[in-house]
Image 1 (spheres, rainbow, N blue to C red):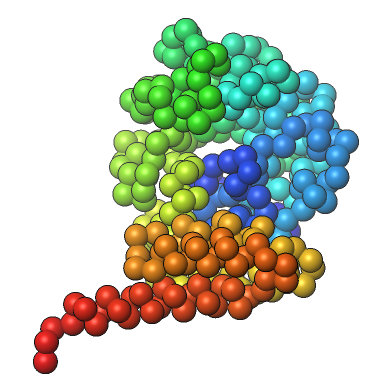
Image 2: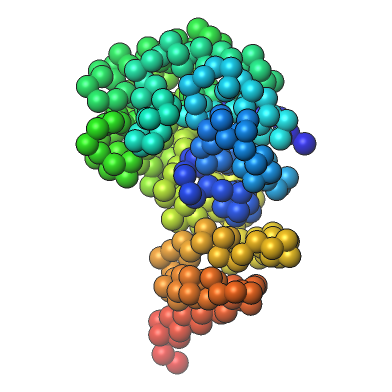
Length: 339
């Protein structure tokens, strides 16, 4: 059943090859409230492809948003309807991905140059579904003036009835930089996104880009934006998500530590293994759980080396956990005061 949607105060970014259904189920055991996003799926793939493979997800993942890529309003509307039928809580349009493959399909960040088309696409999506329709965009591309490109895109979409935007606070360079470089090299302009919220107070504005921690997310919220989206930090150091319900959403709950997260994730692992899913397809998302703790390297090594073997099961996870516990116990022995 689709949950009643609330504008996301904290979300985990859509990330190609990373935020698949297994990753999202892991993130959900760490935070009950964070809004989770799929990897980007093209409208054509949704309409014509294997929907169970592309769209299927565990019911415990709500709230979860489907991110679409495309630029044909009719195709996007059809894909959005399908996504809603599959139970997604939000339909999001990608206007931020800078890869060559995405550009050649005329979607992603290159659409920053076509605000009228984006507005037309969003109007079609909004008319097609009852769940929220949202935009994830950059502040501009190439030689665009972000002061103009960002506000123009947002205003055109707002005129079409869209009121929820996630802004990656960097320009994208469509020529000369790889997608990875586009996540690091163009300078961040958080102040522009803050100003967008101040000058368009009726819109829901979330900020994205280079946010490394929950502390940093709280700083952004203190600057007036409605939400914060974390990407790579939430993936590589997933344990930080265990603080989100308490610190960001204000719930009176204990933080979820990495050991508890593994125990909560275990039933999902068991179900998926029984259904024929390879262990490594799930444990690859768990590698950063013990980031910064003794035993983290052994945890990663065991999951990486043993998890890919034929027939690998939960015993691999148990051995990796034992290695972390042993490393923690060794540290405690070394640091214990002498009797």
